[in-house]
Amino acid sequence: MFTIDQIKAAHSKVKSGADFPNYIQDLISLGVKGYDTIVADGSVSYYGVNNFVVSTDKKYDTLTISAVANKERFIEFLVMHQDGQTDYYTFCQHAAQCGIAKWRVDIIDMSCTYYVTAENPILIEKIPE
Image 1 (cartoon, helix red, strand yellow):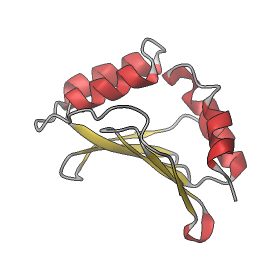
Image 2 (tube, one colour):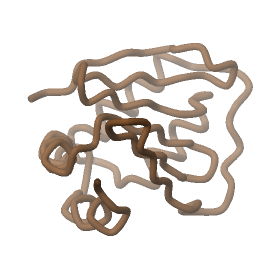
Image 3 (cartoon, helix red, strand yellow):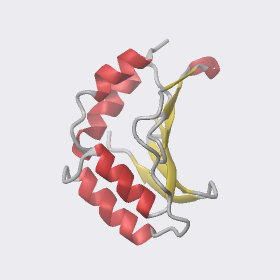
Image 4 (cartoon, one colour):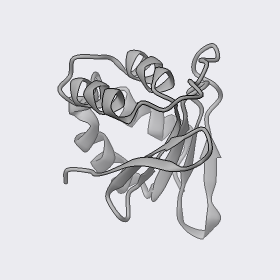
């Protein structure tokens, strides 16, 4: 199975959201089936076959997640990030400001689902292959 060190090596190639599709391809080659990112602290749990899970520690000081979701503004921030205009931490700050508590990447379905604090999905997007 994969390790956090292997995932970190793949992630080290990501400089902006524009690099995301290549990152997903690297994760596929490692055997990752999906992962959850917690916006409040940047921790991530990666899932593999047979209920295999590895998790990271928090990546930054706790961000406050807005109690009020702003889907339209989040989509604007997401487009900026995917265009390479923001780094990862700035994107996480923007997500928190818009009420996004976590996102789940499902590599099998090639989708990314963004959730508000109540665990309700607010946006689902297909990942470019």
